[in-house]
Amino acid sequence: MQPMMSISKIFKAAVSIGVACALLAAGLWVSGFLTRERILRQVIKRLTADSRAAEVLVTKSEFNEVTKKIRTTIKFLEYDADGRALQPRYFSFQGNLIQFQALVIRFQDALVKAGDRLKGKSAYIFLKAFVLDGANTQVFEINAHDQIPGGYKIPGVESKFEKELWQEFWRYALDPAKRSQEGIKNAQIEAPGSLFLPGTIYTIRIEHDGGLRIDTQKVPAILEGEKL
Image 1 (cartoon, rainbow, N blue to C red):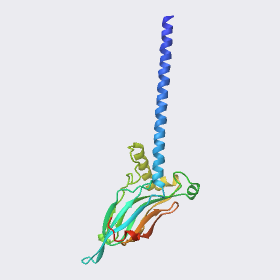
Image 2: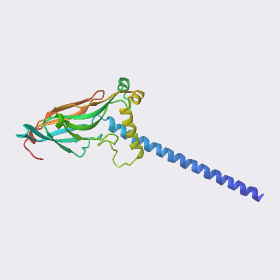
Image 3: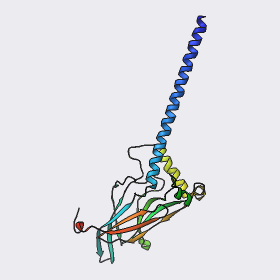
């Protein structure tokens, strides 16, 4: 009788350990799923937030007597999905007709109208700032291909899943066959530009179902002539 009871105890212990391991594995899976879901939601928010914009201000404009061109220095300031300003960048060009190249992704009209959580708004990523001038064309990189763009990185999170999401994003954005499977209407490079002059704030915005546009407004009178 004693051996039978020992076997029974061992069996019960084994079952208990198995159940505990199964519960632990399930808990880890659920935790991993919730973490991935949270990261996915934050990536989506950063990718499609229409509040995320870039502002441009001319900080210096000088006429070069040698080149007969205006040397223009601009301050380029992007905002993340939460409206926080990123680190400003300064670009200097020979000329003041400046363009901003961006990848713009539009989704099918039905998805936009339905407010799909991932595909309900056009998405964009700034790539370059440039001035066309033949052999003397000047180009500055803003975001590199296949990387997490500035302003889209989830702060305080180091996740392989987040990196894989962005790698997948670039593959789908640049592959026509994959785009058609995912409800993407089209993905194209746009390069809106303008004459950039002192005393004006230029704001680059994305439209939910359209592309990029540049809005302008005068620098508030109280700031005119001030060096902040």
